[in-house]
Length: 489
Image (cartoon, rainbow, N blue to C red; front, side):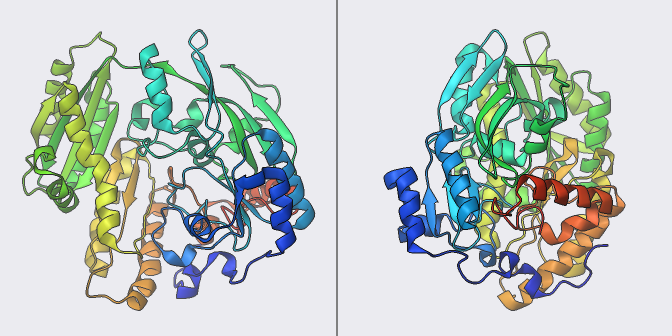
């Protein structure tokens, strides 16, 4: 059962830890022996690593030290030392997460993977790449482009996020409706366990049923079961052509209904189906430089439809077909095109939405990542409208409607003080989670549980499943030192 009346304490510091776990100065010397001058504890570095992209500052906590490994061996030494001293370790990629999974326990150690950033192998025969976890996703895409390949499981924040973080969160993105998510493309991994052992999982294999699938267990585990040091990623031929259609609807429900119609009836399945509520789309558009804006009307909702091809389709005809389906569902096609400029112009608005919300929502915004069965998207849109009406706050709704994963972000009104807002957010979330539970949905599709959703997880898992998850964590991390307080309380 979901908590029905959470208090402000429920949104307090992770695990209610107020004081550093470990501040022994000898530990800094121990870490310096392993990492040299890559064991850093200056004020600016600690402050930067006390947070990720979670807006609520009450989750922030300062580590005692940040280390920057360059080899698997250094991470092995770190984890063995951490077990001996009882020091919590938090792995960190680019810090772009939205659930607090990279926020450390106060006084613990952050293991920043940014220096392990080499692309080790581009195997065009097997369509595989081998990379270190600190490779930025866009960097990998730039390397793959001349080969006519791409990593199809990329998330929307590919300019800043790293591959290791993508895998740790099992990130998805705007094209998941056609291509799937990160887990669909990870074929192998080297992992340092919480106890300092090294696992070599999978490889350049498309089939592998030798034993339990530990690789998939590690994917999406949010740095609680092991630290990735090398990843083998399957890549696929890059689509040669992309086309977009941007459409408006006078009814949010009609826009949501059109998503199912497009998926059912388009002869060339869409590679993206993105939803943006009307006010959020207009305000984001107005915030763009004048030359970058779209011409959009005062509508209740908008859809961005992308269709791609390897050159064997007439994309103009595909976009026309999509336009006819949208018209039949009560929508109006505002723009369409197949040139790179037209594609980029439409996506620029969509990608800017979360940044506009972050800028205007204030520090206490709640960045939600709910997911429902795709056919329930109309009900989810109605739930968002009900929450806006019931609680009297603005709630942007946008995201990957094609796979049922939308982002809902309540915004604090300027007239409301932080105390009142802090009391209101848990009530909004409880109502939201109760609603999506009735639809057969769950609380995260791609951002993870982190610290932010720990207290709600048990309401969405069978008690037997939860017991098994806890036993796995205890078996793999018997001393509870790897990212404690993330995923499981």
